[in-house]
Length: 104
Length: 104
DNA sequence: TTTATATTTCGCAAAATAACGAAATGATAT
DNA sequence: ATATCATTTCGTTATTTTGCGAAATATAAA
Image 1: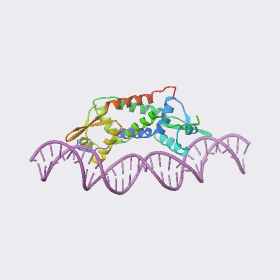
Image 2: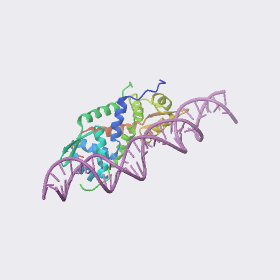
Image 3: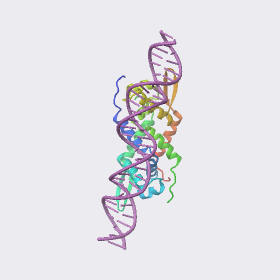
Image 4: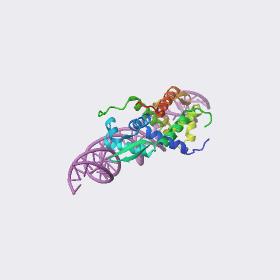
């Protein structure tokens, strides 16, 4: 093969998810939501994570944009939970990545 | 908890791996090495991936730094393979991430 | 209506990343 | 000694990311 093809959409999409997870603060949030199978509030997180409120908000926004979490308005709070559907998709992608098979 | 602790080393380390995988070119390389259970040369990759030689080299360096691949000098080539040990570690980390359990 | 509370957006600065081509490296072949 | 080949390093530029505090938003309580 001498042709430079574009990388597949699947690869690009998966890289986007990995990138969203590739920051300690964001990974911590996802670990927490995943492991405890729970939801959380920005105000709780800001006490556990060494980062300011506005920065935390920015990270939550990115996780939301990547489709990994979703926010539910619950005045005066916003409750953040895993996006179960996309999380399951991610699980499958990762599984496939770690499953050795012969074809490309 | 009102104390802002540092994020754990485990989380920080895992984020580093995820970050290394969070770029389409790097993910493509890892997918290839993982799925085909094979090794490859920079010169082969440069024909498949829409990026220049020096840029590709940079990405390989990052994957190496993250411990995901290793290079074996085989003049005049360099043969890149998955770092099996670390790859297995990564697999376990990911598995744990996707395994719901109650404790944090 | 004013006050308080939780969170986000804005504006900015510093740092990191991505990409490129030219030049360097290291090895072999002529 | 010179030429060739695969790859990396260097120097640079453009873009993105990260982080902060101040200001804005939205909602509820006094």
